[in-house]
Length: 315
Ligand SMILES: Nc1nc2c(ncn2[C@@H]2O[C@H](COP(=O)(O)OP(=O)(O)O)[C@@H](O)[C@H]2O)c(=O)[nH]1
Ligand SMILES: [Mg+2]
Ligand SMILES: [Zn+2]
Image 1: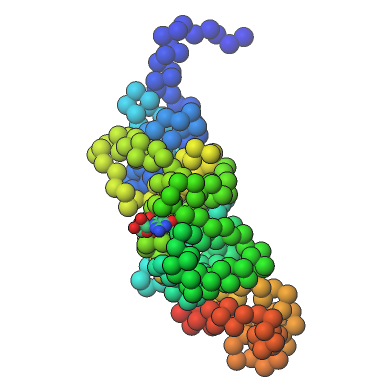
Image 2: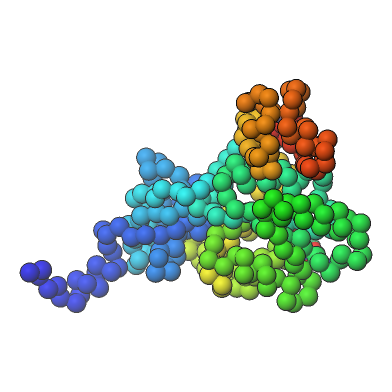
């Protein structure tokens, strides 16, 4: 039979324990970060080189010292996904872990450059994550009618091949209900051009964002937390949102042409009919994808996005 411990030893044990406990990284600074235990306690966590460098969103096993509000990293648990950004040299860098959904935000103004949505969708497929297209600033549709209609047409096509989409606005209250539903109980990130309304959407769905930010600041030894650091926020509806300002503004990273090709999911049922099994649908003869464009079964703009991506990011 286990020996009964006096109360003071139990108190001591809860203050300083050698037990491994589960936690998630809220923000990561390189050699340390802020983690939240499954009980909801924020602790500054020191990393250890031989264990690795956790990313925002990583699930960890830690040893906690609650009295000192600190912890040490013992193990990074296996990731269900990794999210990357590309740098100016098109190299990829991991920025977050365990994301499930990428929210691609577009607006009639500023209008997205042609091919931007298709480009993001290739990355979504490469990362094997879910995508959600959000057409924001719905209150501006009548003012920017041509741009809005063009966007709606592209989005309708993307919906027809399987990508969910919804409209939102955050100038007036009540415009983010559908989005909140789509975020429930998932870990998501918002991407898109500067000015499309990502911060406004986040403020609308995360009314306590400032409170959460201050709690992270308080947990860091230096007492500051910059708003540009990739940070995980808990949603009131359940689930999380990772805020990483500017993460996919334009660029992605270099990837094999075959990965770009797989990122166009509407090529799936065509590629088996190409003459060459490894057809990249550019200069090859008897290409079913080119044929589908000629027959208007595949939008020319999608195909042009594909060719542009092969040129810019293919290797
Ligand atoms: N008309 C209108 N303007 C919006 C809406 N959402 C955001 N904005 C405005 O668009 C500008 C850029 O928004 P912001 O959230 O900073 O975009 P971000 O750069 O993607 O984070 C700001 O002036 C916002 O007030 C919307 O739904 N309708
Ligand atoms: Mg912003
Ligand atoms: Zn082909």
